[in-house]
Image (cartoon, rainbow, N blue to C red; front, side, top):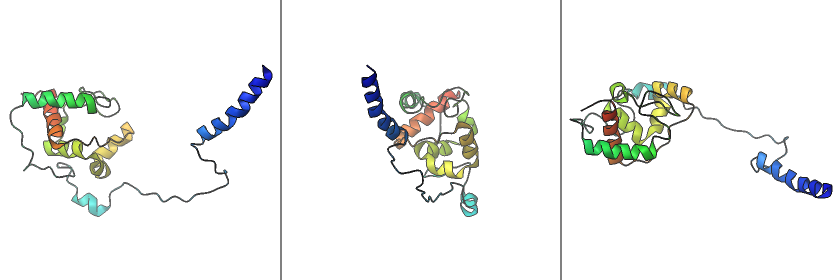
Amino acid sequence: MKKQLIIALMVASPLFYVACSGGKTESTETTTTETTTTTEPTEEAAGEYDPTRGEGKYDSSNVTLGALNADMAKSGKSIAETKCFSCHKTTDERLVGPGWKDVTKRRTAHWLMNFITDPDPMIDKDPEVQAQLETCLVRMPNQNLAEKEARDILEFMRQNDGVK
């Protein structure tokens, strides 16, 4: 029995070493040079960023709101259940990301559309989003939503905030 245990440990030890090193078998004496880039905006880029609009193709001319569209809100809820609710709650409670309560009162519709459809440029430029990233510690992933899906989610957010 002891002999089998010793053999098992001899076989398992290299496997644990490889697994724990991420598959890297370089010696610890090897040094690598990394180039790091910062996501802080330059002064020029920060001057161009409009925190009420965000970064993207949506603005007040192509995102118009009227009375709540219940069908769009229903569709938006369904999409959000699949794509969003693993990180967000509809209350003000933070899960992984911030809660959605009153988000449509804090942000413009076109800002939300820009962020929902392509969050990366806004995470890199928006000071409030960067501050929130420091709290949440996880960047919002790009869910690759179509324009209609994003608009439906926006309508669900409006419904969640009490728009009638």
